[in-house]
Length: 287
Image (cartoon, rainbow, N blue to C red):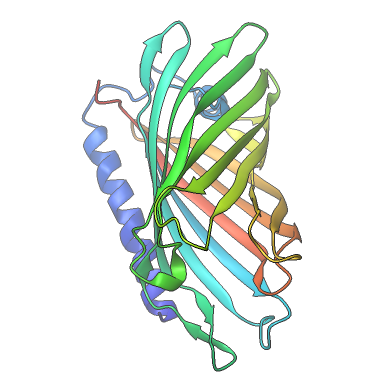
């Protein structure tokens, strides 16, 4: 996909978010009252928050590895993740969250050598179903199921099999911010053939409240492919970024940008650097 078309895809996605926000602006306050951007930002950092959100992540990636020409390709991907927690009472929430990926540009190693573009495609849709619980002392625990569906429209961008497994999160919340870690593991539950998928993944996160809706953020994703070749199993970045929550009209919006540097990445071919831009409104829950 050309840079022009990729930009058009991003603009279209952001336009959809603004349209959804404008529709929600006619409803009661998304946060249940007149709260400041700083208060809303602190709530959003809590992994057991009961706020509805529509988040668009835009990832620019630069690749590297031992394959010929592997140090020059770059790619662009988008992920839309709506979240509408269902409060169960007593500091407990039910989460059912899809993650829908759209890939405008992705380099694919060619059998003839070098790389070719995968073209515009949808990737495998991920999801989790979990229960979150806030307990005394500022602790939060979340447990549930994590998986993905074989929805990729290009076989080179998906696993062509469904994955399913457990996930668990623990975090500590204080006035200064939030620290925590999410770990999940998934196995393939379809296509039981000679290629068995077993991937451990997760996310560690550090959020520091800076005041005025500003936050320092470090919340990258990591993974370990148990079936990968030696040297190709780990993808582990360190990250630093900044986030801002602002109230535009009656609607709170969250914005963030962060840089990920991969201290461990597949030696053959994998992401080495990544920029993530996130944007999304806080919207009223439908219940």
